[in-house]
Amino acid sequence: MLVRGLRKAITRTAKGGDCGPCCGLFAVLRDEEWTAWKWQRFQHKVRPLLGFIDTECLATEAHPSFNKQYIRHFYDSPYVRVAHFYFIDLIFSASPDLLATALKIQCCEGAHSETCERLWERLRDYADGWMLKEVGLDPFREI
Image (cartoon, rainbow, N blue to C red):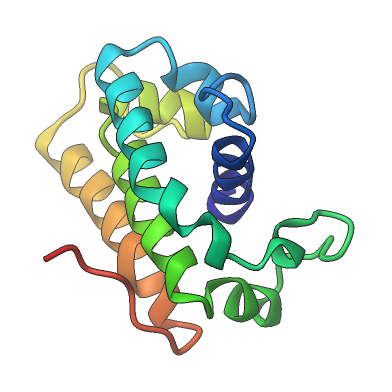
């Protein structure tokens, strides 16, 4: 879901679109004012990189599978890793309630606990770094 969402976000940015319903995640997150600001930040950071991102790896038809080989190829570009960093920042800026709805994960019953918050943080850590390390790539870090 993260790779598909990132591809769609990059494509939306290239076409000058907003964070409309390009995937179910944005359909849920777009109503939150903070997330709208994060979307603008994502576009501001990613737009200058678009000329360096291989458009072939964005095409759904060219890569219908999201296997480890594709993930390695897609994230091989340091520019895609920069976009990924800001995409993860965009997604995880939402509240646990919105994240649970957007990602279709039931994390707890009722109010979110400290344990629940830590689990969301661990998921963010995985998405932000370990996911790329699993395919032998170093994640981007903002200085």
